[in-house]
Structures are given as C-alpha cells and as structure tokens.
Length: 139
Image (cartoon, rainbow, N blue to C red; front, side, top):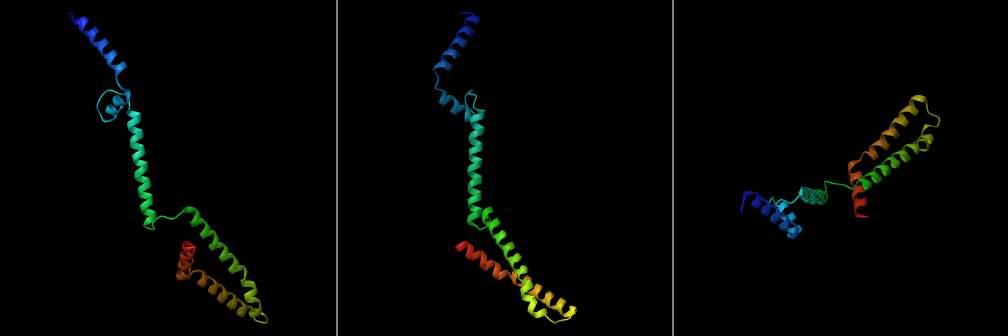
C-alpha cells in the first residue's frame, strides 16, 4: 500500500467516524477539553450560567443578611417621608397663626423659627424613623 493510499484510507476513515460518531459525546468531550468538537459556545454558555447562579446566590445572601433592600420599597418609603415633610411644613401656617397674632415682627420671627425647629427635630428623630421602617417591614 502506498503513502497516498494510506492517506486516502485515513481520510475516508475519519469521514466514516464523523458520520457515525455520537455528536452529544463529541461535544461533551470538547467541552471538557477533549475531542475536536466545536463547542466553545457551549462551554461559554455553561460558564455564563454558572456565573448567573453564583450571582443569584450572592444576592440572596445579601438580602438574608439585611444588606440589600428592594428598590421599590425604598422608593415608596422615600416618597412617604417627603410627603410627611411637606405636610408638616404646610401645617406651620396654622400652627403659627394664633401664636403670632398681635406680636411684633421680631417675636413672629422667633415663633416661626421655633416651630420650624420643632418640625425638623420631629422629622429627624432617628428612633421614630427606625420604628416606622420596622412597622413597614412587619406589615
């Protein structure tokens, strides 16, 4: 048998094997670094899926540890806080009106300053804020 005949026989043998080979096994071997399948896309997809699973687990752990909050819930709480601030400041006029009647400009200024400080102190009370957050979480 000549060298050309051997090469022809080898080429023919490779063609026969490729047509008869189980493509799933060839791809599996290629994904594991064995064989000659063209499965780099498969290996990349598998690696990407593993990254997504790891990220999802990381997020679940952060949420369980209380280090991650839901964006919609945080936004809702923020909106509620600003509505409370707005309401408190809009009520200042009624709160000050009776106290300021008949007072001098200087006394009216002092009354307004005092009322504004009271409103801001109440709104800045950290314990009150935490209680409101806890109440929200439990409801």
